Amino acid sequence: MQPLDRRSLTALVHRLHFYIGIFIAPFIFIAALTGFIYILSIQFEDIIYRDVLTTQPSGNSKPLSSQISAARHYVGEQYFIHKVRPAPQPDETTYIQFMYPNLESEKLRTIFIDPYSLAIKADYFFSPVSGFLPTHTWLTKLHTELYLGSVGRHYSELAASWLWVSAITGVILWINHRRKHLSRKKRSPFAFTRHWHITLGLLLFLGMLFMSVTGLTWSKWAGDNINALRTSFDWLTPQLNTKLKSANEAVISSHNHGDHQHEDHNHKGLQSQNSASNINKPDLDWEIVLY
Image 1 (cartoon, helix red, strand yellow):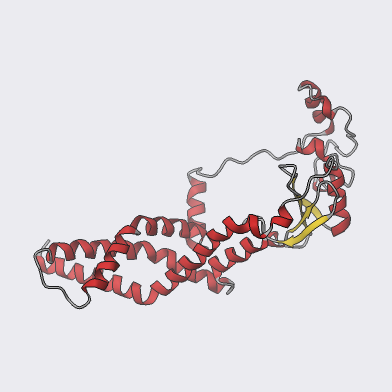
Image 2: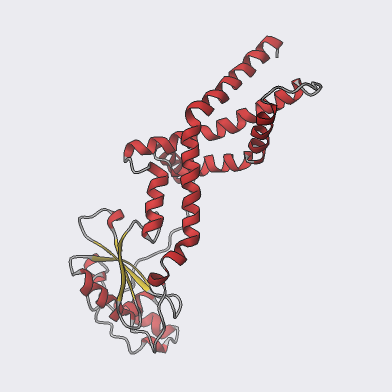
């Protein structure tokens, strides 16, 4: 490359890095700050919602069908069951997620219930995609759109799209500066500031690339294109078959596996046609469905 061409390219990279620092860096800073708070919230959710997530064991827990019936009675029959998570540990609560037919997925209603007393521990509306608890959900929306709706999605897309460019141009400038000024002894008044800027940039280089890539997968426009690319190359996560067994299949499966604890269950709630109305029948035998 001719010296003039090299100088022109270096000047272009320098201007690009400079303008990103002026116009894009504030958005990157906000995205990094809200993302950091978002990560911290995951660690503290167990502490913040201890009373909701845990309970004091007392005797034997009620059957899962009784827990679901209590939650149904609390929310009303107009809600359909969307998801059930039985208490994984003796000192944890069960949560049942309901969906109103005309509401979007982000309006799912979640009831946390004490499996021993059937007391309602909490009643929340939250999105199953962004998190299980209100704080997590609120911070997810703050991080992705700053509660500005579709306009706010531009900020996160802008930050993620230019972060990797800023990182790479910074490394290019450092290499060029190091080669050009290696033998210079004189330091400029801004040498100390530049030194720390370069040091932090190099230390965070790989992290910035990673955050840029993951940020793009969360973004609206680039994220949609990435999902389309993953679909075309079949890079999607394998999905479990969630189709319910019919009553006859459930009985046969129970006998074939010698699972005698299911023999005494009432099968009248299971029908051969597994539709939404059947899944949400009040007398559905949930122990058979989930176990």
